[in-house]
Length: 529
Image (cartoon, rainbow, N blue to C red; front, side, top):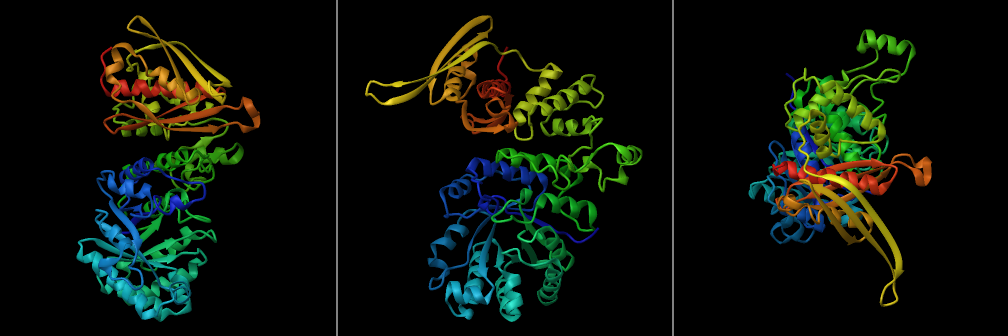
């Protein structure tokens, strides 16, 4: 066994700084639970006191079984004591077992940005670390712009790191904040720092501005660092951060380092990666290492012939180890192992020899070809499985639905658009008709569908739609494009689940997802047929 490397995820903070990304508190909680199940050691939840979303997240944090939730913030400000700095207090009082505090290590920044004596900067770092440790927190020092600082003045940069460690910090994380360092110099600098303070207390935090964040992280680990930070899918400001989705399998499958990710955890890597893309309503990178749709794709000719004889000829790792699958363009593989893994994760014990399993595999493949994506819609996936296996009760039948959108002047002479939906259902032999208006056609359908479910009305328990995402799958088709709708639902118990619908008609796709949401809720409630 090799040395233990600790994985530190910063998706919920650094990832949220990506242009166009804005996580809600519930979305951050969902991502945190996925990371926890994957085996990540630390999950940085955000910056308490910085914004309402982070305050809401830390106010009701998700329950984690394995990972240590970490709050991020700054060392104390110049001219304030650690007891009288509101920002530092918010981080230390966030209720997390660990805190990561950022401070300057580049003399240029201390002089230009802070405008304080360098000794004062070192005192700020030491005092803040000691304060966090005294409050019972596992303290980490985020050494901002460390590699630039070390190249400018090694003595000062090292003094900042030593001050943090001497004050009780468990980790000093060396940051390539502007992403400008290269692997060779990262290795040399980390080796020099490790020789001075010991590598077992050093981490690395790399940005990808030269496309070297993963390489820089590996170089730092080879040089002695034992914590590595990054984000799912390399999210982050500018060009992003080190991609943990690439680092985790590389460490697990191609190095002697030990991590907290077990073999049974690694098979969920592809699903976790793609679920984040679904959450962000963007297409996964097909050429992403390990998890991309083309990562194990082979197209005709000699390559296919060689792969079919021995996959090792063109596949550096077995695709199923990371939850991906081989794709032969002319003859797609079955994906049986992938489906079985997803069934196990959903808590569904289906025997590998079940007579309906081949049909289920083909159904999943066909639907995903049509545009369905179950990586971010686990409830719809479970319902699909149960329908193929014949274990979904027939709670109700949809006879028809209709949506009308009318633009008119109201009684005050104001131009308004009104949506009205009519839904006809059959429940236990009884025909029910519901009509409702809403803020748009989907909202009207949502209201009408849940308005009257007969004997099942009492089982809805505050069922409601809390998020709605639309993705155009064939934009070249213009207004006739195929659309995928993903909705997130919740109930009064605090549970959330996601469902999906696909159609060239956005209303039809929305209705599919809404029906799945209600059926899944009734299934969870063990509603009687």
